[in-house]
Image 1 (cartoon, rainbow, N blue to C red):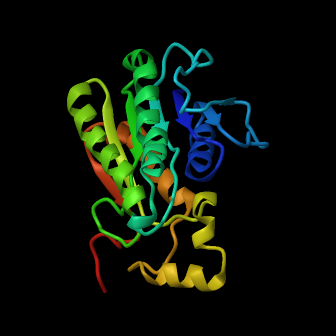
Image 2: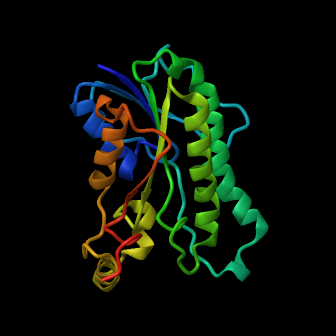
Length: 232
């Protein structure tokens, strides 16, 4: 049994991952910002956390953490000329500075863990340019740089990897998938002609946290229906 800490574990990919990890017999310490999950299992422990707070109180965590997963993100798609500098800063605070603060705060506990691992989240839009994605790609591009830098610095003790999904059927992407026509159009953009599910992404995250991935670090794993590398 291992202890995992999921920031943003109350919905979407984070919720799917929490269920997968607890089903496997692990303890999950999760956080929520808006809605606490109503279907918590005995080995799930959830606490409110605002990652943009200047000081984070993580006293609820055990002394040892085996895996840290940072899920918070946003999808704000606008023409570049309409995005205010403050909007870029708000995204950066949530997606990058929030991750930095959490990693720094949990680092002593991770160092005590069993084959400890950190999993972060990027987006396919960083390495594949899309219209109106500058706000999203800016912060997630920083996450990819952070992933590789920390993987080098923390080796060989802590592995650090990131997952770069394409459009996934979560509440975060609801505006992009709120009609049958939009769902079909977005599915057809991908070589596999499907929209990703939270479980699709969570399964890869669970693998990266496991001992099966013990020789993988510093990687950006694309789980994107082939859209980043295949054009058919």
